[in-house]
Length: 264
Image 1 (tube, rainbow, N blue to C red):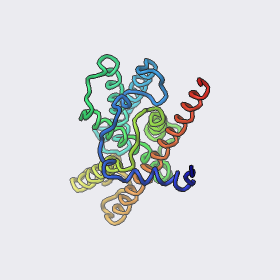
Image 2: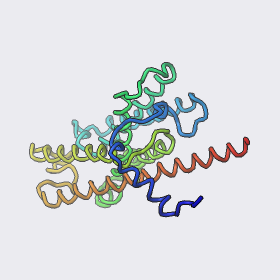
Image 3: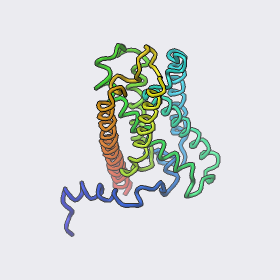
Image 4: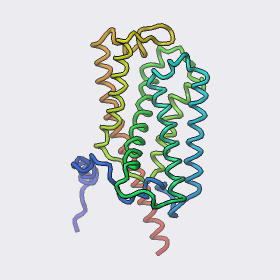
């Protein structure tokens, strides 16, 4: 039998991602949403402990940040903090789902709206976290007065994306390229918020008429360029994270085949 060439093996799986049904949020088996790619049993208490450990970790980080930097509600105007808060939300969501699965594994049906919302949420938060980290260290930090070793700075602009990428490499459910629409929608929502905030006379904690200096709507042309650049970044990171998913699947298949070979 003729073995497919390298180009076919690389690009055929990517081409398959652009089928209409890949836009959807249906996946079988639904157990994948409650399990790790790497667990061998149907249920894993280690995975359950990990889920709650991650949730507690993000809860401590977000609550500590709120206590220290709330600044009369200004904490909520920053995309960084939206991303940080969403990391806490999705880690808690994940922990609750896995806990329910441990006690009532048949509670969710094949077309569960909860699981569809969870899948879209997890992907959106993952992409947003990585884009925020890249944007901050490349374009904002060089002109920012923040200390690179400040705990909040490391948490909100580093550890968050590291933990989300780690989670991405541990979960069992797949990644779909056409799901880019979900994180992109979240980014557009923040862009609309920043415009409304500017025209409503909103100020940052230092009294500036912008949230981020690079997203200053008193210079609409430049701000629009930044928005378009962010859209491109979201698409790029969606592809890179899809590649990580493919790497995860490849490593898993190799490990599984090795175990089968040994057992035979």
